[in-house]
Image 1 (cartoon, rainbow, N blue to C red):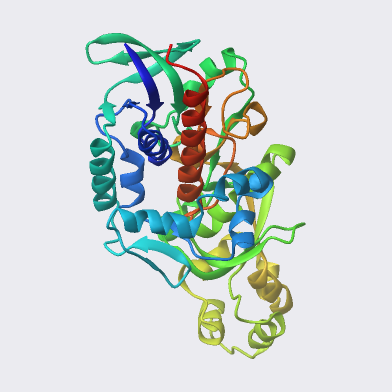
Image 2 (image 1 turned 180 degrees about the vertical axis):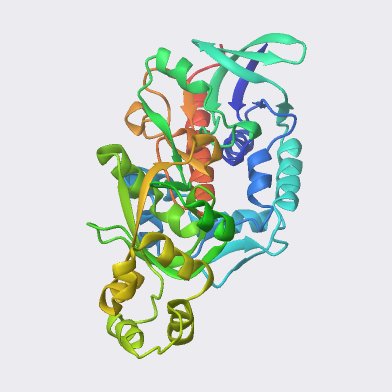
Length: 409
């Protein structure tokens, strides 16, 4: 099979690359391993599709950590405002929520995806589903398809194969070994936006009562750093997860990689100063139990009170000064992130150093990469989707330029 332009991967990055190529006049073929495109995109939108985030550009770019320079360059032409304009062009109105997150008015991913696919098909984009890419040989990529193996030759390729999270939705990282064999510089795939297991694990008593309980109105601090953020998280049977933990996951994972251990501090009462907490605890409690005293004086009950009893020894619980300090900075030791397959996203992948400014692989001219298979990460909140789509546009522009520079082969 010979085509002019081919995109492998039908997620947001791949579809955006296909749109740019088709708008530029290229005949585009999209190949995807799943029965339909956008599987992970649809799942992400089940609870409300968070498209992007409305905040200052400098703050937005800082979310990409040690890759903010490279991702910032991708966002120069397609950041939050441009993404909202793009959605409006599909007939999808958006709004900014109280947290700064941007959502479609209908909150769902399906209407946007339907409108997008309708436009792409109108541009002549052809879709080949259930085509799983198994390797490459120069300008030829090999696929396992419903009717057997297929070799596809393209004048230009855009790979948007996703990272290693959610393999059942198509992002399984199976491309990693064959790109490595081709001489592409890669960083190992690791879980990002993930939960963490606690050391040595919850007691059966605590887990049976509090697994699944939300920790609302708390703050998280990573000792030895200036990372401190309020928010919410959730106690699980294995440890802790949720948006606040996801935001710190890159830092926590690096600590685990370097030292084999990581500690976070939970502030259970971020709206209370330490001296106020201490003063309330020093009030006489008479015959009341500590649990009753914590609830009546500080409003600490349920999972928050349970954490204090789970993690602190009796001398600390009996000392108002030490207990107040623990309430404001409760140490939680972590032993490992949860497996990559459970993570919302992944870190690692194709190193930016292996790519030129158009996202073309230096080792494989004519082959571009985009999306989560690149070595970057970001917290949830619209940052993942924005950067994935921005990279798809850059790769699509680069692929279109490549076609203009070289005649059909």
